[in-house]
Length: 446
Image 1 (cartoon, rainbow, N blue to C red):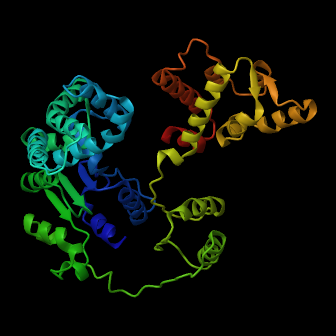
Image 2: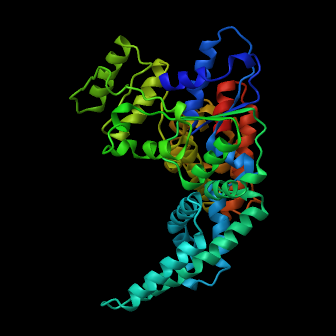
């Protein structure tokens, strides 16, 4: 917080109440949230037009004039480029493609961010692999030669993939950085002052962009650096910050802090069970302020139970945790819907209750259809029948959005993309039905 306060103090007071011509760039959204909080506390009760406060990734994408593609879309475009290229037929299997597509896109992203030539990098790597195979002492398999052929084709695949993205006005992070770094003379930010704060290790493209901003605009760069690891030339944690200090001439912004040497309170709980650990945390949170508290779990699986505890007790926590999509409730709902759809369209007119148990107990289904599980359970108790006609089963639903999705006879159920498109429409319908702003925000985020 002390670092962000120094950044806030650098904003020119003489320009108040209008800071709209100032750009502040942070590496992540977490910093933006706290920075806005500091500005609010610094000027209580005042009406101020805030600076444009952005995450670097968002700003770079905006400068390209293109839209950022999502993971699924990027992989589909890559597969289209892949099947149009000269690769062995047995490698064109979609399931096999999906196993390595995220890795190759990540490679493209990293190489582009470093402003290297993707085609040259993979061409050189393919030559090394070919030499390795030809002079290897063991018998090479057909798969190894197919892999070499794939490597030799990747430059062509990359070129076609990039053309597809650009033709749809799409880009991805690495190419966006590389594009901006190569077209800096065409970019003229409309801001009278630019502040760059909180960065550490910079890619080559980021170095080029920041250097250009520093030399051609009124730009101030703040490094969040502690003297403990910056002044020790053997300390690896300060390596990139020492490198940045040499690269950028903006010396006044390098203000060493000594937070590492300040006294701190540590609480270590030698407890094994989840319940015991959460109980200890509950006691600690109840008896201490937690604005500047860091909680570290040895087991990542502890985080979700802790989040449930936080939600119930509603403390003012800022939590950073990347939850995989396949662990989210929306994913489980979609997965259960697919299974239920398959059940309905393959098993005629009867529904076997034990098979749909997870579906009717899904939190979202319960939320949209209050009392659904109870009504179906009560019906079973009265009739003692595990098989229910489909038409009778769907009557239990009070929300028709999912009913329409489940019973649409014209939707090709073997076409995953058609189902995804219909699913998106259903989610929009659900979003529009929510009166509670919190629920609307939840659907919007999903």
